[in-house]
Structures are given as structure tokens and as C-alpha cells.
Length: 187
Image 1 (cartoon, one colour):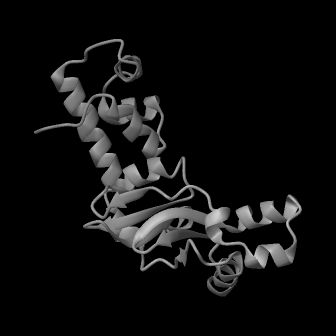
Image 2 (cartoon, rainbow, N blue to C red):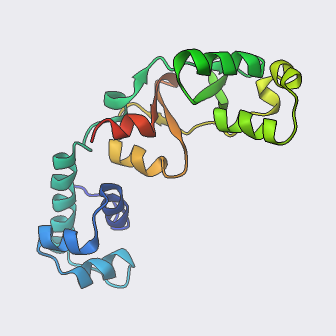
């Protein structure tokens, strides 16, 4: 059986939201050994590494985190075009109840827009008339990360620590979106 690199033990444990002590209790490997493995201060035996990965895999299945991105993604995300005005984005957000959207140029994600960004522009003194006319391209934020449909939900959760959402793709085409609200629905 092939396992991920040892450095993934800490990532997987953190994605599950468990402590070293909890992993130690479940796996039978001492907490101090887990700490040394995670900090790369020791080369653990193959048997120890196998036990840790098998325990993490079992715990992942218990939490439902063995699902894939495609299992959780909302299909056909609502998007706006980079050349649309902020008014279009604002209207769509109000109609759909979404607080953020991917910005596209054709089929490619090029940025993101959110209520928070628009409110920030108001705080900076932009007039309502300016807001209505401003192209999204001029004020959009970074694009959401794009993941393949087969990516594990635990890996998606790790990415969402740095981003409000991820886009899910199949053969290079965006087919869905996952937000933190989608992950919270699984609880």
C-alpha cells in the first residue's frame, strides 16, 4: 500500500480538527512520537507510519470527509463576467442570496467579487452612481482556487482556510463551487 508523505500526517490531522493526543488514543502511537514525526525530528518505523495513516483514514471515513469535491459542490455556480458592472453583481447577489461569486472571462475564472468588497468600496467613498457603472474587472479580488472533482473533501477544507470558496472542475471546465456554508451543512 502506498501512503502520502509523512508530512501529510499533520495536514490530515488538522483537517480533521483533532489533536495529537486524540490521534494517539485512536492509533496506539504515543503523542510524543506523533509530535516528533510531525516536526520531522525522527524517522518513524514503517509500521508506525502505516498505523497513523490507517487511523487517520478510518477517522476521515467516520466524519464523512472521505467524500470528494464533486459530492459536495453546488452545481452550475452563479457567475458574473469580468466586464459586467458592479450593479449586475449586486443584483445577482440580492436575487440569489449569495454573498460572493466567481468572476469569469469566457469559461475561465479570473477573479472573485463579494458583498464585503462592494461594501469596502462604499466605505472608501465611492458614490452609488460610480458603483453601478464600475466594471467588476477594476475591483475584483483574487480568483477562488480551482480543484478537480475528485479531490478529497479534507483537502478542500484545508484550501478553504485561505479562501472563502473553491471552484470544482471537470476536464478544465468549472462545474461547481464549494463555500464554507456547503461544508457546514455536512455537520
